Structure formats: structure tokens, C-alpha cells
Image (tube, rainbow, N blue to C red; front, side, top):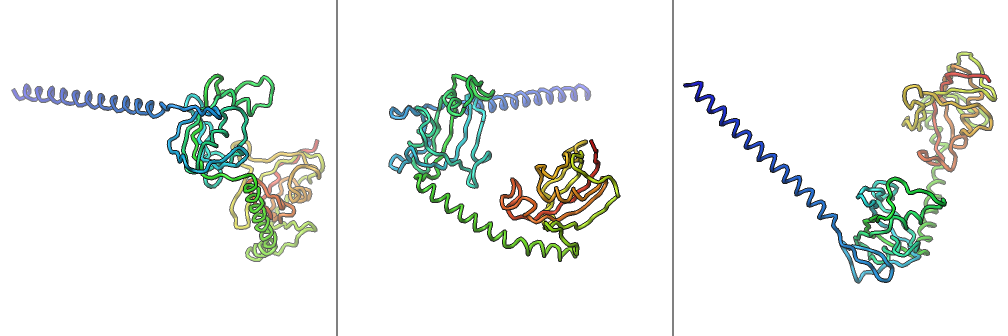
Length: 326
């Protein structure tokens, strides 16, 4: 009897669990369906065509009385650019925008109904979505005859540009701002140039370095020479390196993965490397390890690089792992 009662409870429990699971599954399916339907409804935007410009637009926020830019102005916009499959192609907040997450766009009429014409319908603070012909956009940028569209664009479809206008300027205002920024940058670089000698002197003092510089101001801070083969013009050279700032921040290394831990080149006094490297390697041997300090004059100079500011002294650990004479 006890076994029979227990069996009934087990069956009732299974039924309850099954019913609950089915209800939960149904709820989850309904949620997913509602979410899918909701997303579809959100993307169902009705566009209006402007009779003057041919631009197709849908305003989310619009100040009808606000001042608007004109063709020839420059506009700073937050922009998300998608293809007909709703796949994001570009976003000013994550790809190439400025510190405010905007693109600066010169307003030029490239074709009837182009994005730039659409921006002339906007006032500062407006948010809008534009629909623009994919073929027209492709032809605007393409300069190669009979070129095929990239895989993320599809002929005969439309692209969407979700735009918020942050500010706009006349051409003169834009040029004035650019000159002001250029002057500010030049002043900052002059300060960096003036501070470089004292920064190098402090680094040498703090690290108790007494090595004398070469004629070009190259410092060999440390040398471990094995007496191997000297590097000569035309030799194939393999070098391991680590690049530091004076505060010991590592900017770059030659270690890019298994089997790729050395930088390779054919040595020449005219090769396309920074002058400090050319000078240092010209005095090194196979197997030798050195630490060198380069002032900016024999590094990246007043122009700097993608990751290095102008007038930046650099420290390198170098190891010549192999020298092959042709």
C-alpha cells in the first residue's frame, strides 16, 4: 500500500513538473516571439521623401524652427551606417570618430538624395534616419571602372544612416578652428622639444648611467658582446627587440607569436629604419645583446609615429640572434 501511495505521488510530481516545464517553455517561446515581433516593429520605419533634395528621411527628433546647415558647411554628426540586412558597417562611436564620437562631414552634393543633402534638413540636436541608394553610395566612392561591390553591399538595395547633428560650421569657421588647433599643437610640440634634453638627463641620472653618447647622441646603456660575426652591408639580420618609453612603459616587442619572435631585414646604411637602429646595428655582432637610448633626433623625430608622440626619446633592448652573409 505504501508503495502504491508513493507511486501516486511520483506520478503527480512528474505531471506537475511536466506541466510547469511546458508552461515555462510556452512562456519562453511567447517572450521570444514578442521580442522578435517587437524588433520587427521597431525596424518598420516609414520614410518621407523631400521634394527639393530627393532625400528619404524619418525624424525621431526634429526642431523645425532650428537653424540648419547648407551645402558647403561642415557638420559634426554621430552616425551609425547599416546595410539592407541591418548589419552595422560603420559607427562614429567606435570606428574612427573623434573624442566625442562624431564624424566631421563636409556637406557636398554628390548625387540627388545623398546623405550630405539630408543633413541640411537637420537642426542641432535632431535625430533622423536616412535611406540612401546603395548603388549611388558605391558609385560616389568607387574610382575603378567595372569594380564589383564589396560583399557587405548589395546592388539595388538601400543603406540606412542613423544621424544625430551635434554642430555645424561654415567653411571659414572650420578653417579658423583648424588653424587654432594647429597653433595649439605646434606650441605643445615646442614644449616637448624643450623638455626632451632634461628628460634624458634625468633618466641617465636616475639609472646611474655613465655611458658617453656617440657623435649622434646614441647611448649604449648595456652591451653583452659574444664576439660573433659583425654585421656588414647586405647581411641578412635577425633581431629580437623590446621598445620602451623612459618610464619603462613597453610600447612594442618583436614577439608576435611562435616562430615569429625576430625582426628580419637586409642590413644597409640606407634601409628604411630609424637612424638610431642603423647606427647601433652597424656596431653590433651576431649573438650580442644591448640596451640603447635614442633621442628623438635619431628615432621618430618631430613627426612621431602612430603610437609615439613627436620629440619622444626611446629605449630599446636589442639582441642580434642571427647574421647570414649572402
